[in-house]
Image (cartoon, rainbow, N blue to C red):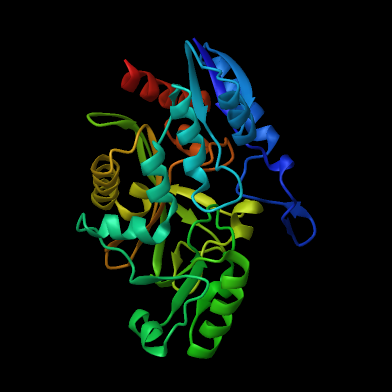
Length: 332
């Protein structure tokens, strides 16, 4: 069976430069896609890079079908709100066997505010927050209900796009200024209670009753593991300044198991297919706060995926094989 990679690569989008030295966007570079292609082939499959949203639209217009193949959905979609729902919609129209979230799951999880509402209904802690539309006028009382410090972020962007240390607010004047600037750049934004503590990322691969990977990782950055006044910013991801640790090594097995169970609860409650990455903040007193999730997390030997394989004494293709097996389990 052939595996087709569905991907929109960074080099095909306008440059988003950091310090005039590095091009970083929400999309994977071509070298990352070729690395995944190589890993799929090591798993024993024929693999090809199909393309992204423009190619899927063209294929739908031509009435093409993906017969006897698996499609790995790796794209964040084109530059618009709920971009991660685009590929699942098109793949459904083509009758494809594809990895990851379906259109509804992708659209919900891509929206940080509404995803928090869904998670809160599961009796899981979430930071206080409210959604700001471009034409909304925000009152002082609304901001004070969130309290300080607060963080302002784009509502539907991933990979820490639009987030730097300057997104943390400590007073009203700065908050109003940042809200105005962020609305101009991103349109829909979120103001949220800032939660001090450990930054945790949890990759979970598999489906109900059969999970291949469910491993929370502590993210160390700026030389700290406890982040009382700092946020993981776009620079930390772009320049790979983070250091990864197994959660159980830092916070103990009991806390690690609580995080795993929380991630499993979220994934199963929303019936998210195959793969999900969930970000948390864990306070020093042990409270677990859901921050956001990603249905198309970046799979790279240099990020958490590679670290997880190394921690399991596995080669990097193990991560890809787990994802492929999860898709095959579901379609059988």
